Every structure is written in structure tokens, then in C-alpha cells.
Length: 159
Image (cartoon, rainbow, N blue to C red):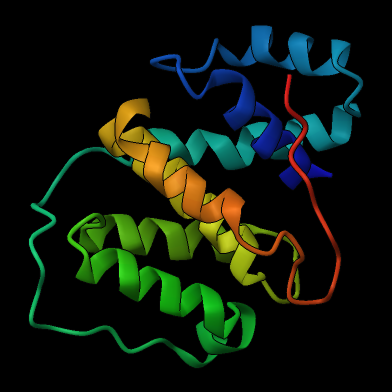
């Protein structure tokens, strides 16, 4: 349910510069029918978005990242490959990749599906580059298979 809130917020505020303050956002989410516990979890998770600030250049690096055993276990192969794709395309800097991995591991999911990791990456790129820069990435994320690695299908709620 928490992840549904994050996707709802993306759909609702993708063209805005920022989200409303936490109290106002909580009221809006409650009015939209989300449960208070899930709202609290989502707002806590989302607060980390403030830690993501433009930093290093996104130039393609000659280095590579080795995932820890926990990361390999908890983040689906498709998601790890997607991070590599974004980084090699020059769209994602190393600090943003690390933020995405941290936020994926902060989810309660035993295994974070490739689809969920793509949405986390979309939030990161949106924060770093703005709404205009994520439109093609959003098409890539939305355009593919909408089922998680465990077979659960998800469709965004468009408002």
C-alpha cells in the first residue's frame, strides 16, 4: 500500500516543482482514501528524497559497481540491470544510483521487483532533472510489463 501512495504522488505531482508540506500532503492522501499507517510510511520513505540533490556529473564512468549479497538477494536482476543501463546512458550519477539502492532496500518487500526499482529510479531522476527530463523515462517504465517479478499486476491510477 505504501508503494501505491508513492506512485499516486508521482502521478499527481509530476509536473510540480515539489510536493506540498508533509501535513498538507497527509491530509490530501487521507482524503484520497489511503490509510493513515500507509501514509506515514510513505511520507517517511519520501522524506529521503530531500537527501537527493544534484551532485556529480552523470558522465559515463569506466568503473563498475559490485552489489553486496543483500542487494543481490533483495533487488531483482532486472532492477540491477536497469540501474546499469541508466548509468551507462549518462542519465544517472553514482550518488543517485546509491540513493535508489538505499530506498529500494528501505521498502518492506523481501525482494524489490524490477518494476518497483524502475519507479524508484523515475522518482530520483524526476528530483534531479525535473519533470521535462523524465518523460521519455516514464514512457519506458510505464510502457513495459506492469507485473512485478512475483506476477502481481499493477496499473497506475491516473487522476
